[in-house]
Image (cartoon, rainbow, N blue to C red):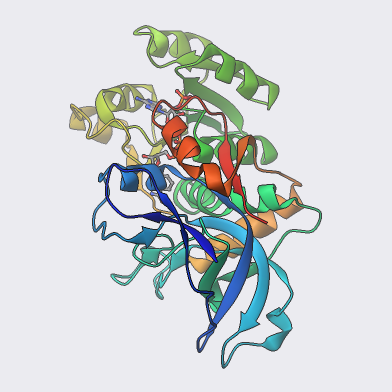
Length: 332
Ligand SMILES: NC(=O)c1ccc[n+]([C@@H]2O[C@H](COP(=O)([O-])OP(=O)(O)OC[C@H]3O[C@@H](n4cnc5c(N)ncnc54)[C@H](OP(=O)(O)O)[C@@H]3O)[C@@H](O)[C@H]2O)c1
């Protein structure tokens, strides 16, 4: 089998020939058809993720066909088209993952390969009518947006939501979910073109977070957001605390711009705000997310497809975030 292997931090992934995988008790081999990139893959290649131990095959997102079932696995999985839930060992507590929680693609070899070995408990049927590209693009971003918005953020129809950095993979799902449940969605972006794309998808409008007046503009044009979904943090976080409606929730699933420079706790308590963290999702969140996207007939937004052999080009593009939606590697 072929795999894109990280041998050393800050060096290109190496396309390696490896022995074919064998199933093991409770686990199956999936012949991958497509894999998608997440920012985690990029952070890992840059050495900006804890616990990087090369060599490792990167990739958390993927979809393919089950080719071999290990002992104890229902043989009905063999030949099935599946997507993989990359969150392993969540544990029993819906409110937070266990200490054993890991994500496919470090430390366990991931999806940037023609074959993946994965516990059968992580499998879900590929949604009917979806392309391989679409199926591969769903797992990490789809479940992260779902848990952040619903399990943690409690978004309801008619509420106002602000989604920051709309070009991001998670953010594009968040916008689709918000529109699907009848929320009033606003976005931020560094790119006017991405704001326009968001409006075409149903956002009421957007603001450039690099423009220092953007919060004033938003306060004039939009209702104060009941829910803010953010993955940037950094200096811009203070503005989110200012903008949130009284009783509002700010959910962070990332901190691309680092720690907030300041946190005005007076505003936090006076406005009765809830500041909430969120990471990927439980097995229940994953199943609920799949049911949600199928019920609302949503499809992942794909920015660009690459052959597996050109995975390094896709990772390099992530450095400057020109994308709107997901980068996908075609494997099959
Ligand atoms: N906790 C979890 O489970 C989880 C899961 C997935 C991702 N994450 C984290 O969430 C973040 C986004 O992940 P992703 O996969 O969606 O990334 P992505 O597809 O690479 O998106 C990155 C986007 O972030 C936006 N951005 C960058 N700097 C910003 C800033 N200062 N303010 C507002 N937006 C900014 C940009 O949006 P524009 O192009 O529109 O400007 C950019 O397109 C990363 O930090 C990632 O590690 C966490």
